[in-house]
Image (cartoon, rainbow, N blue to C red; front, side):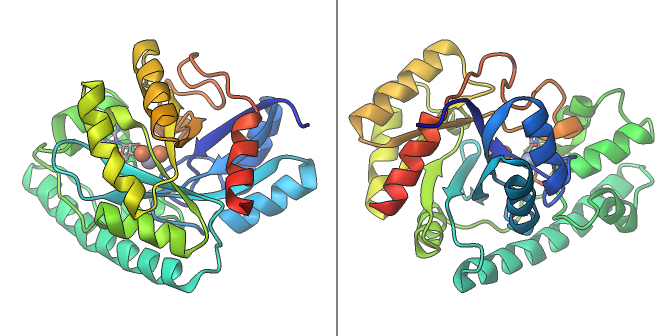
Amino acid sequence: MKNGNVDLHLHTTASDGSYSPRGIVQYAKKNGLVAVGITDHDDISGLEPAIDEGDKIGVEVLPGVELSTKYKKGTMHILGYMIDPGNESLNDALTDLKNARITRNKKIIEKLTDLGMNITLEEVKEEAKDGSVGRPHFANILLRKDYVGNYYEAFNKYLKKGGPAYVDREKLTIEEAIELIRSASGIPVLAHPHSLKIERRKKLEAFIKPLIEYGLGGLEVYYSRHTKPQTETYKKIARHLDLLITGGSDFHGKNKPGVKIGVGKGNLDLQYHLVENLLSENSS
Ligand code: AMP
Ligand code: ZN
Ligand code: FE
Ligand code: FE
């Protein structure tokens, strides 16, 4: 049996992380990780180079993705592990989502311009390199141009949901996201359940239960922002509903200051058995 630390929730420059797909695998190795999950927002273009790098230097790379879904009360993300990167319906859906982001980005630029800021679409594209553009890229530019004093202020003042420069983008329904991942041979996992903003265990469990009918397979119990009591609650729910337990930091490099690879905010210590559980689920 393989041993060692893992991190199953990482972002690269294919979405809004600051490390390249190859670079993040090297960085994972440097930090002693034996396996990682690459889970970019709505984008799987980083998987091939990351897997190739992992083969070269000896880090197991699990192909993943993180899909945003429609959810009014807070944020709902579905992680997909062990997806087939060549799956046609997945690729078609991701192309549509990428196009929806472009439409949204133009609207964010308009709002920021109306608020008196000087920022262009070209600058945002440049900031995102070749990856899909997210709000962290806007935040970096606002910071660089001294419109805000730090990265988080860009969200709190302008970019957060309900903020003056916030624009909603086209999202999949929960059911669509789960079915899409299943159709690409992946395992759908409900990401960072704290962001659903359902505090009571009974209520949260009642919310998650019907998702299993759609094909949900796991719950991200371990996460940088989960408190100890939250982690315990989510673990109980996962066990009770017979969901796989996963965990990860949601590391974005410099695009999420305070979150470190492998350890999150110092609260994570994820072992290889989490990977084994995913692999055995996928082959059964
Ligand atoms: P987007 O995909 O463009 O909607 O951007 C989502 C990303 O923005 C998330 O993955 C976070 O990294 C970041 N983000 C969203 N809300 C906040 C917030 N309130 N503070 C800091 N970062 C945030
Ligand atoms: Zn992100
Ligand atoms: Fe997320
Ligand atoms: Fe994430």
